[in-house]
Image (cartoon, rainbow, N blue to C red; front, side):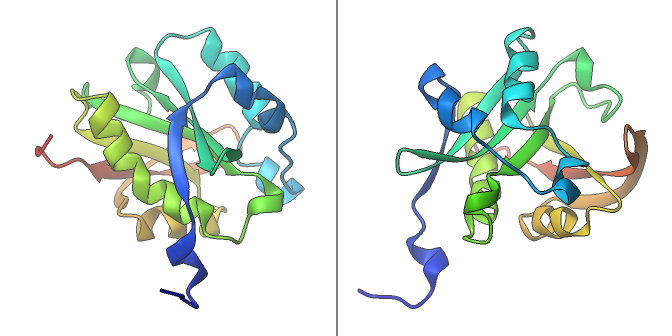
Length: 170
């Protein structure tokens, strides 16, 4: 069946980072206005390799790495939440050449199932978004994240802490 809705035909998947993704992820670019709010994947991967509680995740379209983020748990996320069963989503980005195609939205809708599958003890996903990054905040809220009024000072200004409660149906 043919469709005029491009989003319906986007083939997107999430997987843990593998070395074969490295070349594409090192080639990521972001506009300056987005760079102030996130890190490029190569910087985030370097940090994650040093910390066993950080798990780099790749957003795939077919075999092409179009996006990236880190899932982080443990004591290192206590400035974001005091829930010991939470995981922090950080460094989310979609490569500039792939933006505007629905990959970010699709990836955010896949994250809860991915977390439930790979981190069965986690009951909440949290993330921080800069108060000036309204487009990202809207994306996260449309994907089911909730603003419960929690804020923190981040490296580039005040951040909203958003929450996604995972259902107990695991």
